[in-house]
Length: 482
Image 1 (cartoon, rainbow, N blue to C red):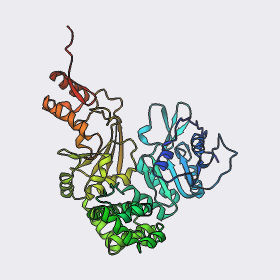
Image 2: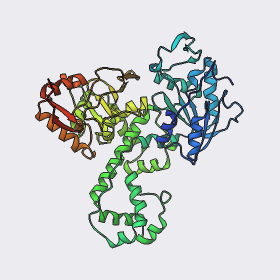
Image 3: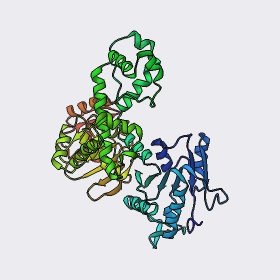
Image 4: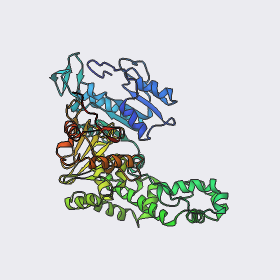
């Protein structure tokens, strides 16, 4: 089973990016088996085994004698891009798919990664100066290629990484979880003897309703003791409402119903599931929030189609309670995406459906004047008072294209100001950001907004005002010695 003309396996000190993603997305845990098809020297295998995972792997050069074994999660990590023969490339992904009982993870290098080391074109790829072959994909091209090879529509997990699911219900549960916002539990407003006596019984009920916005069925949590103590689950929850805030729980229900609408709207990108393919918990959600599945899908379609209405996007951007609004876009910190209006959550979700998770993104740019979303990486966002842009991933929603751009070698990269505008009011550092902005406003540093958008322009403005930043404080600069 040749995998490449010649392959050099790289040594890593950390898990590969596809494996980090599948762990981050909670699709792999020690209860699931993992097989690395084309594992190289086995760095991912060693790291996962150290953490107690059931793992195996095979590689034609480094583990040729290992047994090919089926597993819950099969990883085909950066293998297809080193196979020179297109037919062998297709057969490789098909073999890996046959081994996957639950999920196949496929990753490949993208066109933006090609550099001067790739010296000569050959077939549909490039030969490096070391004689190795590389086929570079466009992100969307990789997805289409996987679908054609295995006859299943993959889900974009991240740049150059896709998941293929065996079970439609598992796929839907994963997609629904991506758009379920975190909600703070309603605070207790009073004490109650029944609540205190049965706190341990009530906590799982509280957690469930917070997560799904509805009461559980008998099979979803242990209800026997609750029913024995209170007469029914509904009566038990009345005690919870009594000691907290009943209206706050109405808000939880509303927000979870919106989460479900966002998920159903974006499900069209992957093929909206039939009712029978929905996980049972999601079927119960639909029944609890809407009259039926058809009605829920109709509302979701209305929400999705509204993302193509420029006027609707403009109004939603203006109505957002979080984000920095400019004439062309709304900029929002990734931690505050769930605070956006439902229409903008779907708008950003359209980009997620195209590109998956952009791991290093700090800021999301929602364009107001064109159907596009960019993910901007500012690694020092919290620490640096004016962090520099390092990378961007631009999603053209009309053309369904993804473009990557690096700013790492820019001598004068763009920087951020007024960081408190990007984050929600609950962000722990928001007050610190706001204090710095107030100091900078008083110093007159924002008088020329065009000038201060880059590192050099900002430094010049600070020099002219005779100030410097020390952490998130503005202080007078020391006079220069003559």
